[in-house]
Image (cartoon, rainbow, N blue to C red; front, top):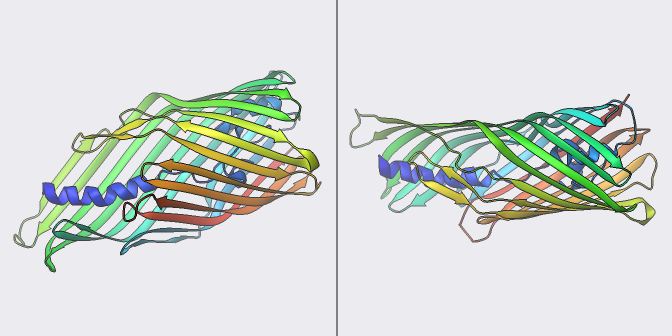
Length: 379
């Protein structure tokens, strides 16, 4: 039983690890490689740097919604293949921005990660060959409010806070063979829930009119829930009338990471805006069902975004993000065109995300691409 569980953990640790990478999030930021810590007056300020709300010049109420559709996911390694198409609309962010006499407030709901995979996983493990029919669903949801205010034409501050909810479920039916013969079958079900309060303070400075410097940090000071349940049922060929079952409950979160973002925004000639973000994620720890503690190393995410505002009715934008976490290197490319009417805009575009192993056969290859949209309407 312990050996079979260890084999399964080996397979699924690669899957669980591979899904935690930066997918597109926010409003304009999603089309610009997730660069936005120095961006002003964007609905995505609540996720990147709420101080940007303080530089919002209009007193109009605005509503925005963004999302992805027609996405395709592929996760492969050797004989493994998880590559479902997703034709549903996945919300990235919905927000309402409200001007007040003290500054600008916003309420928002955001889903910076939502992933659903199913397919076949095959992996050798010592004397055993493992093949699994697998499904995996994972989601992170943020619900909260933000506020930003400027103290002068060159300085603004802001804070965003709310609930962060994470939910992950996996199901698998696994066959273990040795010497070409069936040794055992296994059914597993794992569900984990994480809930906490996040806080995101931020500052923006304008040393000169064409340069904006942004600084923001995110952390989770209050952890409200951290639960996980693993259920395993094993049926060995040698004992056909016996099913070994085990249910284990545990707390998966050890030390939560914090994030620090340093960002620069430049207003260049010919209406070109360039944004450069460097985000540091601290070391964190997790626990498995056996109480073993695993550490995830600290890492950096480098993002660059571009937008051209020289055309009155349409504005192209693009971006790229790079990070290296553990045994993989992640690349995110995105682009779009904003169709502008006064203070309202509609952005259409797409993204491509890939996670590449640093060493051959070390982990699973992952790639994802799809269509993106975002709209912001001012009243």
